Amino acid sequence: MSGLEIPLSFALIAGAGLYYATTKHVEGCKIKVIYTEEEEEDNKHSLNAGSIIRNHCPSLTDPAQAYMVPTPYLCSGMLQTVYGTTLAKKHDSTSNVKYEREARTMSDGGTISMDWYPSRPSDQDDAIKQRPIFVFLPGLGGSSHEYHIRSTAKKLSSSLESVGPCTVVVMNHRGSARTPLTSPRLYNAYDTTDYADIVQYVSECFPEAPLVGVGFSLGANLLTKYLGEQGSKTPLIAAAAICCPFDTEIAGREMDKPGFLNDRVFQPNLMATLKRALKRNIDVFKKKYSDSEFDAIMRVKRMSHFDNLVTCKEYGHANCWDYYRASSSTAYVDNITIPFLAINTEDDPVTPFRGVPVKKFQNNPNLALVQVKHGGHLGLFTGLLRPSIWYLQPVAEFLGAVLSLKKE
Image (tube, rainbow, N blue to C red; front, side, top):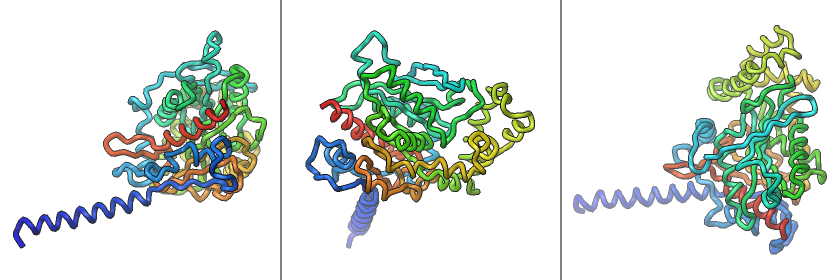
């Protein structure tokens, strides 16, 4: 065998090995979709979640598309999650949105800021007032300015086939996105009142516009809980929940575990965001808390300690774990009456997949769960040189299908 043949043989073997390993990796990235299968598969006009998935969501069912292959250098849930948090200020062609802000005073005197994209529908333009409106709900410490929020807003506002242009409004939680605190009451995982009021307000302002809910992380939990509480009374016609914890006690205990990322990344970032909001609005917050209580709150370093001092006092829970149990949306999933898509990853370090009530998705025909092997928390980045958010397409397909079917 010549000197040229030896390296060529090794190259062929290495190439075959790489192809085999890549194929096995890609096969392991197949999407699993869970829903009730009682309905016949050929009913293309049904609003049952399973029928919508089968007939209108090729990114979840087409054998050539139904994969979420993570970016190679973001191969773990932690890397996906951390990478997503570093993009907060990034603006690119998929996320360069400019909002129009509206402030809404709530019944207790608190303030919610609503960021509209591309703008709040004009009272003079009947056609724009009839466009579908997506009502977003960010996660803990998040706002309309997060990269994943902006990217989803841009995708849903302009990329829904057979639906046309849509409007997005992001409900920023009290004190977030530089929303002034005009009441000492803060947002939390338990109380869905603010979201219910905003949805009702949007519905009354634009009665001819179909409304759709989209929640992220803690916002997804609030959205899910709200839908179960409201049942058939909700003005929303469909919803999507991205990385919903469902069982917030499991998520809370996971976040409270000692470890490098919790101690040095997640907890410090969350607490810094909350403390900045409190410092900016110290006069309002001190109407309810004494100087010593406020000082104690500002010294805490973990979300569970903050909830013990603030949230539990507000709602009468014995401790943070009692509060987390009461906040879980799992118990409300059975009562959801509209098409509902949930997307969760198996390697989510913030909201563990073991908290997802998989069996409930098999028993309620309105629900569909997309189980993704890789993606972390609010990551799900795919692609090599320019990672993109994978879930934008299936969310657009599912919600776009509901809007289209409702028009028929």
